Image (tube, rainbow, N blue to C red; front, side, top):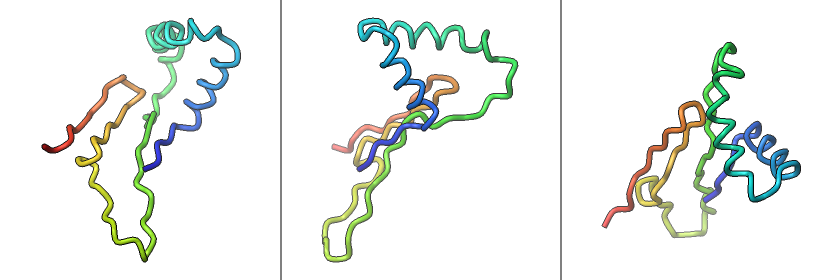
Length: 91
């Protein structure tokens, strides 16, 4: 499985890591999300897939099966409203 981050989100995160003290990163990110609409709400919003979990392809001689998204506990996060949808692993 490969977990990838949206390129724009990754650039912002890297900038923050280089320019903001580590102990303030979470607070600054939370504060920014609170004022984002006020600062940039006049622009037409575009949806962003913050994090994406992708299954790697299986080679032809590998007999294992790929798990389904529900077996992996796949979580999708949406940056535009902060919502998260998750599926629990089956018992």
